[in-house]
Length: 536
Image (cartoon, rainbow, N blue to C red; front, side, top):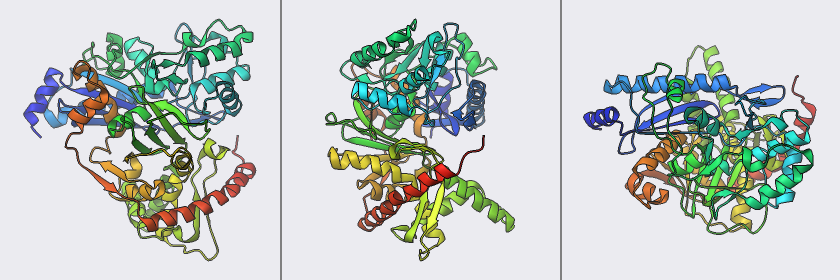
């Protein structure tokens, strides 16, 4: 690494900054002119369950972003002796979907309802039937229609409805825009024109016309942009909002704000047809860029787009690593009680690496990792469960493996539709997220679960924040007519290294046996949801 060259990039503003608001962490990544991460900052946060709604408060959003940026600037100063004043381009991304409505004066009209909520079943089913297009419960249009069905008083006052990334971008630039990938999680996109589907928008307006609202749907949704489009620049007010010290200069060009699905595709070079990626953290989702449309509507499959607007099948599951993290916390406490102190990452590594020593079918153990509802399996709430047969091989290795399998189980149900019913072909699945941090473990087990090779690149740990930084770099560095796919292939990932794992037949057979036990065990999960009530 040429420190002097990096210093010049920093001082002359040849950098690109990406900040992503994830479920449990806000992270910033700054890349140099060669797209390599040179500094980072992060801020941990958690969603709140308030009045039965999973939410984040907007004051926490800004406190987190400012802390994240401050730590990034400190990292730059510590590593390179440079005060961060100039940034060449920047972009913001966040958890997709959800509900953030505002009135004409910019006042927030309801709590931010995140992707994790499963309160819109009636609306989602009604719109899916109307459009003949799957509308998941977490999509913004489902939340809007459910608010209408519920007769919520704020609905007539809505002047702007957006996602978390769209909200942050609006406050920093004054522009009410959204990248097409994130927009595709608000309302269906017509990929022929990369705009909201006009027929479906008209159908929705006709559906709610008897209510007499003063708005039409397309009037309140963000303007749709694709990767490389001008999305505005950092205003003086926005610069002070991001960096209250006043050091950061305004005028930085911003790329269209995107969702974490689009940044995951970008960060894994998975924007081309026959490419797929798996993002596995608090939630887990897989994306497959399609060669042709699906033949039918599946409630388990969401149709979204790449940041360029290519149709993409998405299998999204609300639950992935939270139960693994919770058990790791218990083991950390146990070790402390025995007089030994371990950091949580050490405990997680022990669980992951030991899982490889377990029986391929987990020896008769069954875990269900549902902290929240899971629409793919028809559950509106979740209760984490662990069960075992009386004669099960109850070892730590099998216990750990059962929880890693559980993290992938619901995804497997959805992906089997693509592979078995739609005969979707993928050359490779690219993995990123916390599930893949233990080297060689996540991709080996994921390959067995999905029945396809899984690769993890050296940069996989950077994830979404790096992905949105790449989209920011593409905005200002692309050649005329150069597609995002070509830019990534030729200028970012050329010569990049990664580790691949092919499906192991023994692991595949063991995972299938576990899945039989898992799907049968969902009856116990439903009973737990019905009988173990959350305290008010």
